[in-house]
Each structure stands twice: as structure tokens, then as C-alpha cells.
Amino acid sequence: MESCCSTCTKLSSASPSHPCIADSRGFGRKFTRNSLDHHLLSSSLPKPFLQVNNARNTFLYRRSSSRFPSTASRGIISAEAWDFGRFLKTLYFFNGPPSPAKFVEFLVEKLSGPSPKEPVKAMETSGIVLVAGATGGVGRRVVDILRNKGLPVRVLVRNEEKARKMLGPDVDLIVGDITKENTLTPEYFKGVRKVINAVSVIVGPKEGDTPDRAKYSQGIKFFEPEIKGDSPEMVEYLGMRNLINAVKGSVGLQNGKLLFGFEENSLKELPWGALDDVVMGGVSESTFQIDRTGGENGAPTGLFKGVVSTANNGGFTSIRTRNFAEPEDLSAYDGLELRLKGDGRRYKFVVRTSSDWDTVGYTASFDTVGGQWQSIRLPFSSLRPIFRARTVLDAPPFDPSNIVSLQLMFSKFEYDGKLNPTFVEGAFQLPVSSIQSYIKDPVTPRFVHVSSAGVTRPERPGLDLSKQPPAVRLNKELGFILTFKLKGEDLIRESGIPYTIVRPCALTEEPAGADLIFDQGDNITGKISREEVARICVAALESPFALDKTFEVKSTIPFSESFTVDPENPPQEKDYNIYFKGLKDGITGKESLEQSPVPV
Image (cartoon, rainbow, N blue to C red):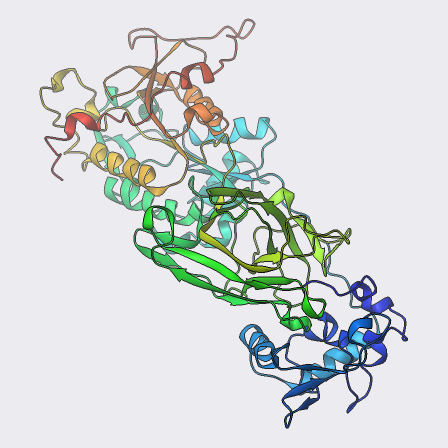
């Protein structure tokens, strides 16, 4: 709320002679007009002790002639000037039925001294990278690279003993199975901002393998393969769906999370209610409604409208949501974006992270352009902690993981005694078609997935299977392994998460460092080091050029030759952005399948 005076912003330190305190003591006494300001009205419940003369339908109060000289002798405000019924309706909307006992408790607390301050909670500054399939050939190398970069890592594995033996006893580890949705507890993924998924169905030699999977490490080209354990459908498709659903909330969506607005002909609503200066004795009035044709190109939009007046020391209107049933976690995002049609005025947007009614609101002011639809971005970093129009210097940092309510305001007042330079009394209206979170530019991938070259090739028209890798030739025998890998890829592309899909050719245990070929369209064959693939995955997380790209990759070394590295003269580290920059959007290799879908 806005404050009536500088003294009122610090009630606990106000002098007993201040009219806001002096006239609020004892039952049966008349409250000053000032005592109706936020000191009383900011409690969690309506005030049952206000003296209302029902016979005259007027509200009685005393004024200080020094503060209100023009009306000092009048002594009353008529119901036409100050709507007591609307005042009660406002409080009832946000707080529920009146409770005299809680009001008395609140009043005693306020008059006896300051409330304890909320503990300061540090905002998380760096996100965790989740590695799924962290004990596999690519996954464990990804973990090592991330650790060497000093990045926080969490691993998702099925076998804790194996993982701790391989990755160390201090690894941040969660035990879960992507094929079993109930093992992917939401708490596991709090703080996760990026994912590298190296989970894959297990393919091994029919005749068995050594404990360290030496035959498998040579590549499928050198043994007769079979599926070991869960089927491709369970791992590559259903497992992918489960993993995406588990991490989507923590890694975020490229186009943001819609909080209010119309999406696919349906309305995402918020519980808006008017919160105007009537709660301070003012007469301004506003509302929020849906205009079915008032949006861009005749589309529906929300409409914040009303009449603002400075009568009775007022001067603001606002709409505020009730506290959300469950706090919104927007920690994956960088701010909020409002799509609106401006009117040339300056407005405020307030975000609260506490369910208390009278609490700090993290606030940003924004200017609008008259008659134009525009997108207003409010970075979380720009929100300033405001309490009763004053900046709270020792307020806790803004916590985007616990957003409890939102408020949109048009006010005469800015902060710390300053006034809104665009404020004018009278009617106003602000169409607001959407409110959503956003990820700031440049957007980089949040989900990097290791798939496989060849996923679009089974039964591709005109393809000579004899020249294709075993997985392509044996797709059906291996439970449609490549078909379900492609279906899993599609889930990622359709999820809205910023992604990169890496399709390596045959994986080897050779060292990284060979020259590489990046390609698109799913046509190349060859081999590539697992270490190289791990490096590519980590590099993709930080590259806007890898965003929403699908590509195949191999080394220039043929199968007939082995690749080694001289430890005394290792190859220079690659700048993978050089490769990423050459990639194009929308190329997956599925283009050749459009006329001949693969049966499953």
C-alpha cells in the first residue's frame, strides 16, 4: 500500500502524540482518519471497531486541522465520498471473514513495538547441472569435465554403490530410474538449471561380456547385439517423457511460463481483486475484467481500468491477486514480461514472496507508450524491495522460487517521497493480454541429449542397408531401438525446453582430439570418441549457436585406423562454437520420412 506520511512509514518508532497512534488506543474511541491508513488496514483482517453512524450512513473521525486545514471543521465524510462498503468488500476479498480477536491481537502487537525482521535468505546464483546416465561411457566423462570447470553437478543414477565407487563418495547423487516415474521425486531436481542426458538403452553382445564391458566398448560393429534390460520403448521414449516432465519446471521453457493470458483459445486466469486507496479513506476505484475483443487483432485481453482521484489524500488504484494456493517457482527464469497496450502513463508491478498481507513488495516501475501494444520486461534483478512506499535496505534478496502474489498499480506516488511524473487524475485503462516469465537473451540450451546417428534411416526409401551401421540394419530385431530414439527426440523438440540433440556416430574409447565433421540430415557414418562427445555436450550448454539444433558428428579418422594422442604434445582444445555456428534450425533428417512413416 501507499503511505499517508513519512512518519506513518515507521509506526513502531512514531511518537505517541502522532495522530495515527494517539487516537487508536482504547475501545469505543473514534479513530482519526489517519488511523484508517495502513497501520490498521494492513492487518490480516477487517476492522470491527470502526464507528459507523448507521442512521446517517456516515463515517465519523477527527481530523488534524494542521494537516487538513480545508476540511478541519467538517468532521465527517459522507458515504458518497468514501465507500465504507467497498472498503469492507476489499478486505473480505483478500482476507476472508472478519475476526475481532485477531484484530485485537494485531493492534496490540503493532502498538507494543516493531515486528521481528524476516531472516535474510541468499538467492541462488548458479544452477546445478544434472547428468542423467552418469555411470555410462559418455556420462561419467561429462561429470569429470563439469567438475574440472568448477560447475555444480548432480547425478541421476540407478545404482548408488556403483556411482559412488566410480564418481567418488562425495558426489551429489540422487537415485532414480527414468523408466519409473514415481522414482523421480520433484525435490530431487530443485536447483537444477541444466541437464545433460546420456541415458541409453543397454545393448550388449549376445554371448556376454567382460565385467568392464570390453566387447561393448569396441562398438556394436564388432559383436552380435541384443537388448539388455529395459526395452527401447521404456528407456528411449517413455523414460524420456518422464525425465522431461521431472525437470521441465526447474530448467524452464524457452518461451517462458504463462501466468496470465490466453493460450490456444483457453484463459490462464489469476485471482485478481481491486485494491484501491479506499483502504486509506480515498475514493479511487478500479476493476479488472476480460475484454473478449479488445486485444491485438481483435483477440481477448485483460483490462485494468478505473478512475483515480487524490481526494481525501488518496491517489492510487491497483489490482492484486489473492495469495496463490501454491507459490510459483520461477527460479529458472530471469524476469516477468507483460504484453499490454500503453496509455503514456507510468505503472508499478509488485511481486510478493511472503504470504503475509502487509509485507515487502518487490517492485518495478515501467513507462508505457500511448496507443501502442508493447512488451514490458521486468528483470528480477531490477525489482526493489518496497514497504509502504519506502525502500527497505535490509530486505531479504528477492526469491523467484517462492512467488506468492502479484499486483499492478497506477499511483501518484513513486518511492521514498518521489511522485509519479505521469500521474493525472481521472479515468484510465490498461489492456494487459499476458503476463509470463522469460529467459533473457542470448538463450542457451538447458537440455542436451545424446542420441544416435541413424535414427531416421530404418526403412528410409532408397537406402542401401548393407552400407549402414548394424543398428540401422537390425532396428526391428533390437526392439525398434532407433525408432524409439527418434520418438524420444521428438518429445524434446516439442517440450518447449531450450535444447541441443547430439547424434554421435559409433562410439569408441579413443581419446578426444581428432578433427571432426558436423553434419545435419542424418546421413553420415563413422566413429567418434566418447570423450569428444562429452566435451561437445558441455560446450553446447553455453553456446547460443547450439540452441534448438539437431546434428550428427564423427571424427575424420576411418574405422580402419586408430587414433592416439602424444601426451607430450596433446592436440589443441577445440572451439566448438566454430562447428555450432554452421548448424541450421529445423533439420532433423525426418524430412525424408514424411511420405513413408516407419511402422512400429
